[in-house]
Length: 412
Ligand SMILES: [Mg+2]
Image (tube, rainbow, N blue to C red; front, side, top):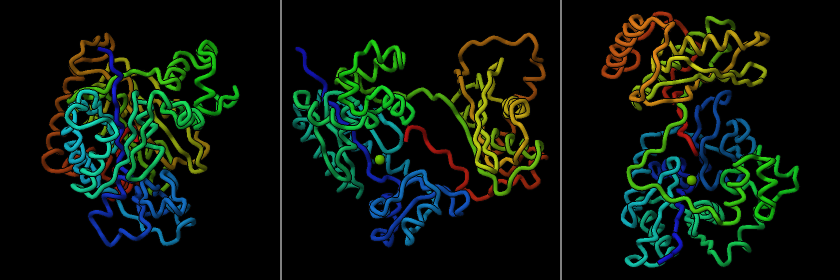
């Protein structure tokens, strides 16, 4: 028997800020923003509570700007361990209704409840039950979208929030969805939205009613995918329990406390950042097949460079050297450097067979590997400061505060 799938997308509202307000009730009736740093020069808003949102505070904006809009704004540092804990508790609630739960970032999940309706009621009833359970058991609120496709379920969870359920049904989705701006559709970023506008495609309906042949010419295969999504033809499934989405890149960046004035200073920062990247590559049993660096100078000009690494590696020294070589080759010293990000890309599994380079010295590589593995073990047992490279002992112009070591999880 053919039956359409029933998908829920559940999104925790103002997640980080809500957790902070749960832990510290004094914050509840205040204007609160979780920020990457408490220092106005470096800090950006990672999340805000409903009250701060009403004052126009936006995620991603600098603290000083947020405080102009909302002078009484209280900024608090993030506690990612807490967010991970709460995210897990909420997912446990979802699992009571289905084992098809696919997380998207820390605060969002898709749930396929097609097979659960006999036990728990229709999609809308399940959504309401979940919403009430989450509120009662954790104190957090969610907004839930209910629909026949993942894309529309996600769209639904954005339509009404916080603490709300929105259903987008197959026989009436056009009235609800098509008047919305194309940028509301998942997959349409600001660059795509701007290009769509050039072809006079402003709404999701405009997109749905454009000839997919034209979209293919303008946007390649992605254009056709967007057209399918806008028409409700997207029938991708919710990944089952335990599925791990493949990691596309691992990176780490910092805004320095003082500008970096020469290549030597940049090298040290790159090496320091790469130590963390190397650790995370090892944890995930991955090797980097490429490296990408992003450099912001003190006039806020931002540039990204990337290149391939011939022999995939997780070695700190090898990746740092590749990143620094790339920096030396690409960066024109007109201004001092304010911020550096190193990102490893083209990741491959450690277990995947890969070619050994004829040019590299394998014995030397093995030695470095042993040394780094030993260093990593020491750092793991005794802390990051227990052992490091001698050149990193001087002032790196990097913040020592713990809340600077922020790795914003993907897809948020
Ligand atoms: Mg959210």
